[in-house]
Length: 153
Image (cartoon, helix red, strand yellow):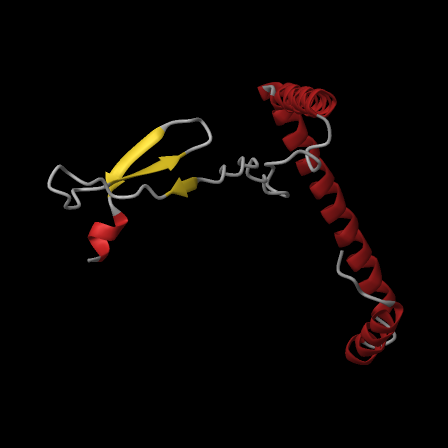
């Protein structure tokens, strides 16, 4: 309680012997012992009174109910964790968890496009008209656009 060791008790005894004197020292220790005993009895009575008041007001039942509720919550959360780990497997091994970022799905490579140049068309006068370039795509579709030669000149 006071954390007094044997060395401190010896020092207190020597000081008391010097201050009080050897004649009155046993009476002082007797009085000090009686006072300490009465203080302990009063503290024990106070503690019993508080415990009795708590029992009468139902605090002990509330405390027991809270403990049982806490145990129920803990067992339910443990069951939920077990179910999740069994159902979903190890969360660290799944992609997209906080520990391992998800890899984006692989996208198919674009098919190569073949472009073939079409010679410019000549009109009835023999002059070059607006040429049309065609592009052959893998799916067979044709795209029309402006002639590359016309743009270059």
